[in-house]
Image 1: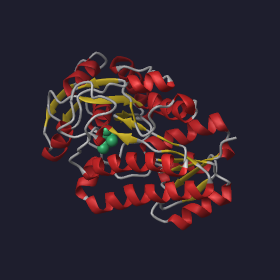
Image 2 (image 1 turned 180 degrees about the horizontal axis):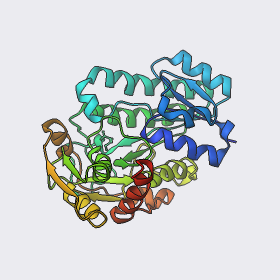
Image 3 (image 1 turned 45 degrees about the vertical axis):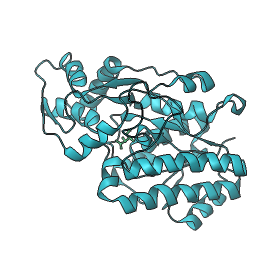
Length: 318
Ligand code: VAH
């Protein structure tokens, strides 16, 4: 039976993933962890085992793994792209030393490891359209550097020590439960909140800027499906291109207007996040994930927008 430790369990992915994993594997088999408690995440903290784990503290992490007899680590704790450009040294420390500690603890305690990479692992010299699974990766952000290095380090731990490491390259993730923390794709979440609260949104990403995106239910499903996939069928491991849709701000605004006709959007482009977005692919080739472990997203822009607006109207009491 899996005994799973989730790092970064109070973040955008972790908060929903932890609750989903507890439904699948049993509450007591999923230990949520974070560097500190958050008042707004009481459901995750109080619905099952919770531990304080600072991922840069290897001793603390090893003690939690031993205490709960963990055999699977889902490592989500990281600084994202935009925040990583404000604090590049801290991004390296958390994203790289945190991952190194996870891999060393996994090696010593015989744990499997799932940790996501990102489309940020690609850069301006990467083919932009239908970006191949295996291609040049010269990212221009510290976040992207840590993602490429993380992919290679995870493959090394698999080949050198037999640690069962697997990962996906997440696109921008859109969800209604927990706000994202400092990414470039965050505009695609905030637009829904502002559409409901104010009927308008000012985008920090410019018109015509395509990025790959995915609705959170598909992202959660990708983690469990890859984690449980038959290892004999995996040609790749760290990390798989996956995507569900590719759109630009005008596309998501047009979809929202189908539900809120009076919705208006204008632009106040953030040069930092715009340059990051322009360095990333427009769309990904995710055929390897589909062939090797049955990746098959369910949501497109239309169905995601319908569900996001429905759930946010309840959450925001509108
Ligand atoms: C970010 N949401 O914007 C994250 C993600 C592909 C983007 O890694 O930094």
